[in-house]
Image (cartoon, rainbow, N blue to C red):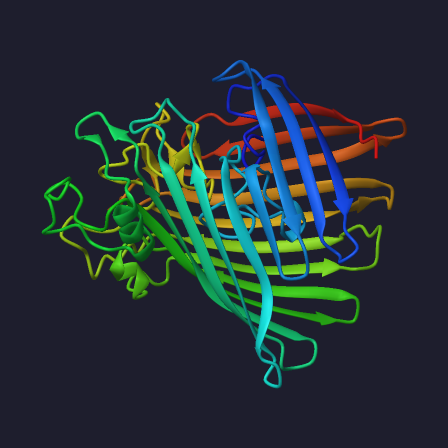
Amino acid sequence: MHSNQRGRIDERTNFSSWIDGMGRYGFRDGGIVEAGLGILYKDGYTEEVQLDEYFVSYENNLFEAFAGRKQKEEFFSGISATNKNMLWSLNSRPIPGIGINFKPIEVFKRAGISVKASWEEYFSDEQDRHIPNIRIHHKSFHFVYTGIRNFEFIAGGHHYAQWGGKSPEYGEIPAGFDDYLRVITGGSIIGGDGFVGESEVNALGNHLGGYEVQLNTSISHYDISLVYNTLFEDFSGIKLRNTPDGRYGFYLRDREPEKWIQAFLYEYYFTRNQSKNYPTTDGKDNYFNNHLYQSGWTYEKRIIGLPFIMLDEDRFRIAHNNIVAHHIGITGSAFYTYPYKFLTSYRGNYGAKSGSSRPIEQIISTYLDVNVWQEFMDVNLQVGVDLQFEESSKVGLGLRVSKSFY
């Protein structure tokens, strides 16, 4: 019930409330300026008023640029376990930053080949982590092929890096322009000035990335997508030596409205290889963990990426990154009247890094959200169940009341 809730709900939350407002202005040339502000209050691990988002953005037919704390777009009808890719889901509150996303630009028009790219810089305001005030760099590049009728093929990759901040052991971590250049290129610091050279054998900062392949087509009034994601944190993963680790997905959406099943998604996640046949000097891969940035790939003690990779009981280090998971999502309109979302997943946790030969825990999770009243306001009933093989099961109930004015 608390996964992929944009950081508005955590494991201990009983009450959460937020209000968001947005305004748009369109120019004659087709450009659009948008500004938004949202305020959030919830109990749980923190009980305070927070900014759910605050941003200004500009969009035209070539690119979209933004500045501030902006909620990310939802993909796959909101029924994916990780949204767009494995590395950045909807599991945490958005991080303040600036960025620009270029829309597909034709490079070989007759062949139907375009390219699209993005460049983003985030500035974490989080204090309660091992190294506070870190920065996060992100860039992506994709080829888009549409040379065959009713067929779109997208292939490319993402690169993320946590860098900067102040370490309790080493003090200020280099964050100058030369260091930034090394971060964005993954340049190694081994043999350099010796800073964290003995502790961090890879590149300056905590680097993550992944390749993506997506095929989109349609049959009759159905849209179909096949999705494949990889993830890597060093050169062995870049060379795909951690195959078959990644995400494999099938998505089907009915364009005709008010169907019992409007969209269906199946995803398979596997992270058990971890370059076991090509280990680096510090051993196998250790997804979302890092020697220097010990809080790992998290923000406000929530996983930024795939929520099946989980924190320990102290919400500090990654406890489960060696996993196998099957996920199914369905959305539609029950009795053609009541919109619903149903999610169910099985995951086997094998611990972290090397893991065990057998799962240390197996969990079947289900979640149902039904919009039961749609008059003056929307009222949704929610129920979540975790069936655990080794421990007692858990049940959660929820009520969501919402109102949109425009």
